[in-house]
Image 1 (cartoon, rainbow, N blue to C red):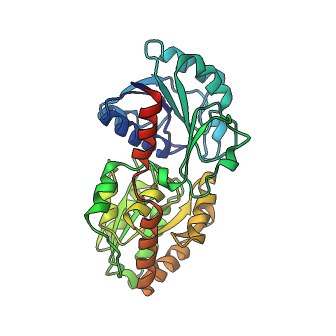
Image 2: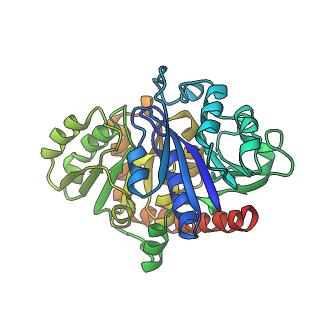
Image 3: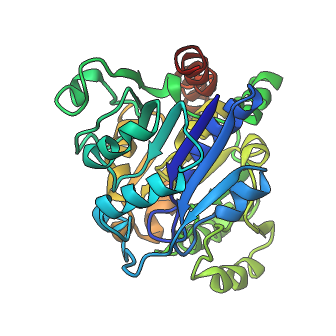
Length: 360
């Protein structure tokens, strides 16, 4: 069985789309599927990460127009959908996949329809429900996902994978989860990670809050992103001034670091499902428009503390949230237990089981 994946990463769009596709591709590869990635050479594309994993990647040329913000969804592609479709078709000249997986906020039904004659079935990974799709499968792993949200946007026969039970998590999260049930009752370690770029320097803001004498006994680990974060040097200088603080280079996986922490501070994106699976309480900030709804939902359900959108959050917000966990140990315990109830980590297997059955 052959599967093609059309996905991008960049400094504007981040790495979440590519990482979740990489996770699903690894699961399919374990089952003997030949996977081909098609990625455009944006700045911060992470193509090397896929190639280091042993995947074949066919490159599309770097666009002349570069998206400048995380919310410019239409501009993320850098070219028109028509041009991208034609280039993708040319790239598939000798590789007719039984399934094409598409994970890109810039692509919609007009692109997918052009690819129809050149692939078997089409699967879309999405969570915006803001545009029509011509697909056979649709995956939306968010809490709010429902068939009704997509009724007017997808074909009636489309099979949907909806909700956190289909969250695409790598095997190491399941393996760690099965080792033991870890419900912390004291705040000893904090992990900070704001994705591939962190343009608003939220990591430094969080570290400043954690540098208050009130938290001097807490160990702090900060992971910088893979897309050349602009404030890295400032963060390193700041970390040198705080005892019990370490700054790590980009990690292939955050699983072990998450498992070994009592609280995580980060963005309200795809990492949310990894945190919930391992029972890691979290303080989150919406760093992109598409994260706001899910972040608010997590807060309302007691699965995280949401501080708001990145351009409105201040140092005092981080201080207050961490203080809340430090003063209420039962909050750590309850959020941890509830998170593991919501996400069991088996979503990738569930999706792969269906695809292997239907698409061979």
